[in-house]
Amino acid sequence: MKLRLSAALVGLLVSVAAWAAPVQDFGEVNLARLVSRLKGISTAVQPVRITQLGDSHTAADYLTGTLRERFQAKFGDAGAGWTPPMAVPGQRHALVIERSEGWTLINSRKDGDPDFPLGGYIAQAQRPGATISVLPRNPLDGLWRVRFRVRAAQDGAGALEVDDGHGSRKLNPPEAGKGWQTVEQKLYFPFVVRAGALPAAELGGIELERLAPGVVLDSIGSNGAQLSIWQRWGKNWSAQLAERNSDLVILAYGVNEAFDDRLDLIEYQLNLQAAINTIRRDLPQAAILMLGAQDAARKRGAVSKECSPGRPLQLAAVKRIQQKVARDSHMLYWDWEQAMGGPCSMKRWQAQQLARPDLVHFSQQGYAKLADDLFDNLMTRLSL
Image (tube, rainbow, N blue to C red; front, top):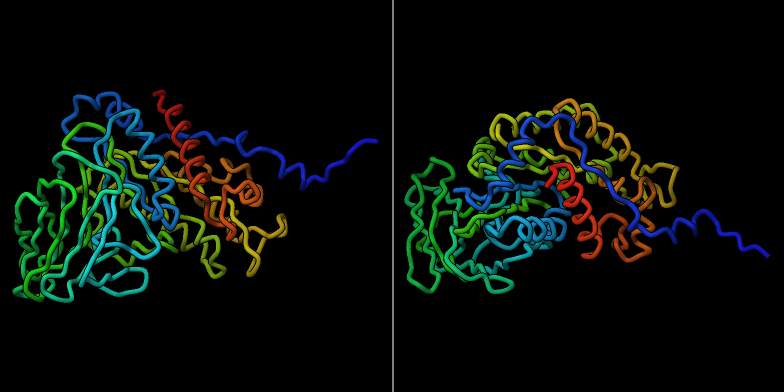
């Protein structure tokens, strides 16, 4: 008697380990430069900087954390990269923890400010002596280059102080109305930022780099964000991105657009193209890699009939637009959904405990698997 398995059961038994997605090159003009930078990293004056901007998958720093580990294991550890000015609820950084007392967070996803900095977060002191402590999850030795984004929102704003146990120094704010200024200090971990008299200068982000050659990877994300969140940031945020002098920019948006039943696809394509144009203008030396939207599932709202539970109805259209813009703008492209096994693959990942029960997010193991796929295929594309 022959045992017949349903197609659904066969699908669940197929190991996701068999799937992989090549990094496609649609003519990225800065690809050779990126290869050269990575090959010459041991003697480079500046680290190779990679900046990923995205939604909750980026904000959790599991995907980007594994990418950071893989790059640094191969090319050298140049640091932790960008962090928000203070802890953001529901988000994390793989290497550092931020603990605050007496500060409040202004978040561009739900709050208003005419001049949000890169990343879309502002920390405001609520009392004199309010502190933000930046601590390593595991020991991080040596002297670090630390850049603080500081703004004096009002005349007479008091300076912030930073103390790493080797002495206290001031982070003098610019004049009111001058916007965000970058102040650099050489510090040891852990260190504490302390507000003086109110109104104190505001903090808009922290960049953490080792004084050593290697790769540094920024994880700049916001839970629930669509790429259109950039329109809520200040007019100078892209100039702040340009200051990072990144060699590779990774765009990791799309799933929240796919869940948006009211998404205007024409407007989405225009916004995506405008975002690419902004990066090309302000970081002309950077290669750009777009991560195509992942597979996901939903039980309510508009869904495709090809899966059970269905894929978000907009997912296929969002992916088509992403691929078209990547091709037209001569970028690198990695198909996240293909790396999962194609459409309707999320249930297999969840069954193998690689994805969360919400059928949108991944387990730590799942994120690591995806990051390994992306890294290995990117190295193949770069012939490194």
